[in-house]
Image 1 (tube, each protein chain N blue to C red):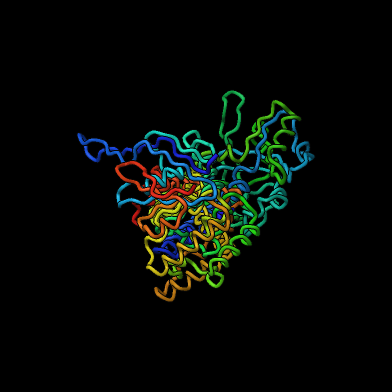
Image 2: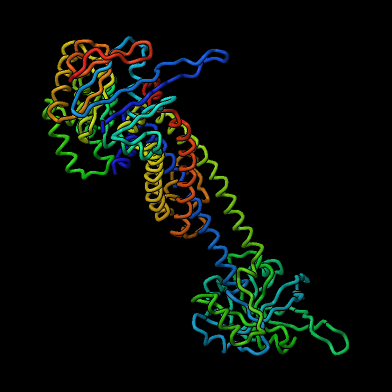
Length: 399
Length: 231
């Protein structure tokens, strides 16, 4: 207890500017931590928004390929939000009026699934209908490329299994029943929707798969699907988007690495501050040993003072960081207003909606890393000085 | 068994430069600090008085010989046990009082007892009692920076007595004080040591102060010679 009290007094000692140094280091750690947490939360928010779009539109949560299972079997599994059959194929679309053409991916499923699932959160129906089984739902971008309107007929060329050849082209005329838009530009430009039964009637159901949206524990759902059909192939959204997912994780890791350099600078300051404190307090340290404190306990006092400064900086950083993250939209709006006042033009800060968020585990890991780093540097600062005899320090120390 | 026994103590310092001979400071010194008695060591500056005192308190190691504290040889103990032994049995007073700058006078006095893990309330009561006896009741909540030299040295005396040690080792305790303050501190120290029944090993070049003690030794030519001995 006495050691801890001494550490605290030493950390904020009024003698020889130690208090100012400690407060500067404390603020440095707090500001660094705030920056790290806010940047991390913003990246999480943007990444989550991107990944949510991908999960809602591109990969679903799970894609199941099974000869035995029907979507209705999977719908009974606890934790499954909705499961439905879907199929996709490539096709060539030609607008006969304008002569424009485009290769596209056609996704087919029960059109009701759009309304009933998370897909509806990511797709906006701009005009027309989505419930005509014989029609095509195309993106607004494709509409512009081909120059077509709702109600137009376009020619679609599918590839279907042939009797003599493996694959043969199959031309059919289809009605454009509506336009949609989504925030995934690549998805919008490359994908059209049509009814599942209609596509089966054209190319057969050999490529049919089951799309699953999960509301519960994904691992448990996968387990239960495999329990129903051990031969089923289940692809999770992480596997489906592996390249992008890995890239996002790499981006985050690199950001952490670069921001860690900022803490290295703070920690070097901590080492120097500890060393200076040791020099300032070496006679007191020797005196403490003379009156019964062991060498290790004295060293611990100096190590603990560094830990106290770091911990207080982290507490301040986490509190302020969390407040900033919770009010990030207001903070960005404020920055936007300030920039507007100066430059008379708006920034993009408030134009992309996202929910900045950071998990407690992530905060804990960041704090532990900073704490470990600062403790290491403080311990480096503590080394050597107390290797000399107490008497030598008392007789020879300058302070 | 004596609180401190020095048996055939020799201390040599290594030469500063290669080729030079080692310097012998102390040679085959025997000294018993008798329980309840005060002992002074006098001698010229550089004669090795402070070195002898620090060796006696386990703050420095002898080149040869043994230092026994209540029968325990310092050399056989690791740093932690040696520190505990000092904390329990020895009180130190240095010329430069060496108080903790960020602690009040009261907290400075409490320090040795807090280090040994005693209850804070007991430590506080004992420290207040000592400070009041030394006329520092009004100054106990001041930090050392706000105290005069004499007051600081009185705080250091209180600290040395805090754990009721068997022996007090004092290294020129009045060396940095003016005559009036020095005289005060001398009387206080000797009175307190007698009242509390402690032993005192004092190093000083002040002959008047030294001869107030029960035993006086002169350190000359690396050896101790008795000048005054209590029977």
